Image 1 (tube, rainbow, N blue to C red):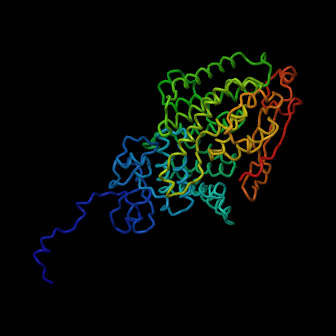
Image 2 (cartoon, rainbow, N blue to C red; image 1 turned 90 degrees about the vertical axis):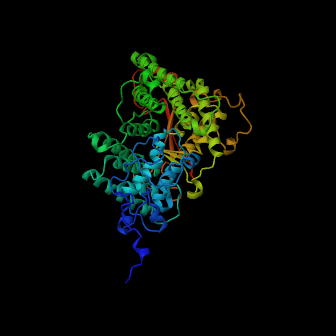
Image 3 (cartoon, helix red, strand yellow; image 1 turned 120 degrees about the vertical axis):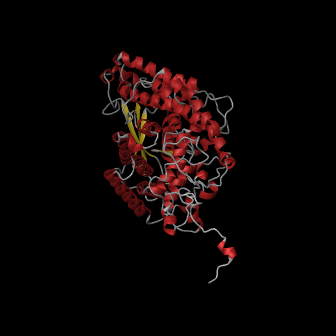
Length: 568
């Protein structure tokens, strides 16, 4: 066949003018076409409605173009041909836009839920690096590492069954099946060291979150300890590659604080570090400095709690000296991290939450050796700052539209780290002003889930405490439009012998692990202790020596077990 001159002059098609890459997705490689390498799913697979089978190992080690200034715990990659301009990035402020994240193309509804919850949930006290980690790095690893994906599916299945309460007869089977599959893959990764330690850490965390959603906190703690062990055992720095191990350790320290705050004066699982110095407070980032302080503080509180209900003469002087040092460092952090007179949620959300956590620790440490519950009454300004600043934060967030909600639908929040529930719960429990504690309760009921903390469970617990201390509690009392009555609402109206000293929710069916058919509620009752007569307790033989659980086998304590009611 004759070839025309026009055809002969056309240059032959070659691949010399195409940028080569060995990190394209497996689907595009099989089709022998150029992959745009968008994460977690490439645009070519999405446009052709094909399954994107992921990327080879090493495809997540580059930083995405246009965000080199954004720090991250684990380096990321994105499409080199991304058409998103820097102006669009700054306008949307959504890190997932940079990696072309589409939650409806992750091929599993439970993975969609897991990633959607992490993206939609409020920032709370996270640093920029941690926010980038949860909303950008984790979805990439979910898509590329089988064990992380399986663990995310287990979390998503638990969330669907216990939070969304999807009416499906097979939901329990689905949750169990995905959990066991994830457990098997994580064990395989740990045995074969097929992947770097970071995916194993993230998979362990997702499994811990899955257990926390189901209120199986003992099993969740085991997975959290597993993540700690992976970090501590991998001493070979080469295994971590370019990962910022210091920042990842800080993230795990924040998760570890749940152990100290949720339990009754239980120390953090991570060992105590060297004492925090003034130079560390002034030179480190606010969140890093605070969590070093809080770890030291809660280790101290757990140690001295045995002396709380003993006579002052029995307390070693060095404990009082150390208490003063802990309080001084907490106050120094607060003075170094003041809120401006005018602030907004976008710029100051993290600082607001961190201050609430610091104020809670300040009050708790100040009263750790005071046996009388009336001792909390003089910390009204601290409690009121916690409530007013968090209330303003909630109001500001309510007025802002989340650009991701339209595509995902509004999901109840779940935040892995410590957030606002613990400060609000502590305030509502210990600040007996009727008006202010109800303001705190209103905020608790809007706070979703944070690690082991559940707004519905803790909210129900506060309602029981109010009813026992004040004599009654009605839902109508949560309408605070009447304003505060200084006489009627005063904390002085609750005498010492009616105040609850210690309480926590309990699982009556812990041995069988059978949840309620309708609500999946395990913590259906609360156990509460109050001291009948503090002065006589301190004068008795029991008050002359330290006791780990002062209310156990004592004639001076009253125990009550109350139902928390059906938590919808």
